Image 1 (cartoon, rainbow, N blue to C red):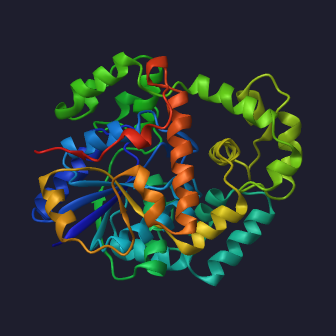
Image 2 (spheres, rainbow, N blue to C red; image 1 turned 120 degrees about the vertical axis):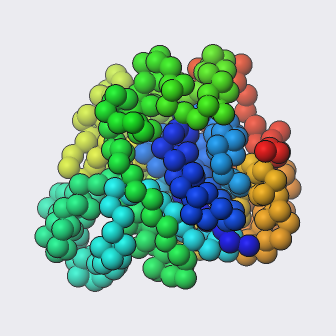
Image 3 (cartoon, rainbow, N blue to C red; image 1 turned 45 degrees about the horizontal axis):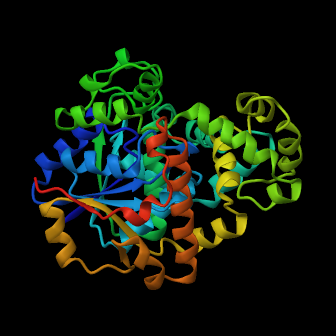
Length: 400
């Protein structure tokens, strides 16, 4: 049974995601489409706008066959940790191919750039730029521009850069996996709805936070459901989240901070000082440098809130995913689940999960649970701030 994996956040699910699935259905109608989806927190370092349970349902209603949660230790990591965790999870599920959206669908160019990123030459050049105070992303874009012919077409394309991280991780951990690039025309970071026929997730989140309706930008099959969730207040209130972050980080000592993932070069001293600022926005502004971007600061803040340490992140990065948490599936997905032989445990009932995973797996399960509870605590409506939701949830079977 052929399977296609899609590394996703669906934050929120929109017509651009539906377009990718439509293309895959046209090209590979008999393949099972499996989404490896970030759970309660996303790679930009904050809670997803909607719960993983709602987002996985919308994915199934829009053409995905199975949704598997990417554990938060990977979904909250750097581009390398994020992509490596997802690729290794695909390998454990024996997924045959990976599909990704990219502004540049020139496979030879992508392959050349991915090989460069894995080379010792590139790593030395990146380290030199980091020593000058550049961020990893800036250093990588500069090297692509200077080393690869037409490298600027990649460096100016956010989706292509992310695709390169997937391919780089695949070449290291799962070289047998096939690639299915889907050409993407919209800008991944564009904050305006009107600038593209298929607006970015960034634009949609911005519109949602401004109280705008996004019905015309999401598939018709899920539009009413999304509107209902919004009317109920079952979504992240980012002001509430940032107030919570400031409170948590004021309670952390310099020693506490020094143990957290990504806290390097003595940044914990400035971080500790700046938490005396009156708002989280002020904290970020006073910490930000070329090296410490807003996204990196947000990830570091989430590490503090969830107590993700250097040691735990390092261990998880070395060992890879310890389980596959099933969130939702349809009838085609059910057939695959019956036939699949997985290399790691499949989690369906949360209460039983600790008894079938490794010691590291237990630590990662606990993080996923904390992340779900923390996101729920930030929801707009008090009615949906209940904790321990993972224990009440069974994978959604949607017969479509």
